[in-house]
Length: 48
Image: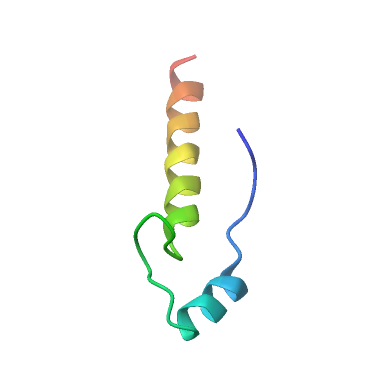
């Protein structure tokens, strides 16, 4: 799994420039992906 942290400063700049929060190219999409991957990895580790 790639360990890439969400850049809050960049997200704020994008939000201020009018970019969408959700959707394929949304501001929160990388954060949602990162959280989902972390949760799945925790599940795998718990049952291993």
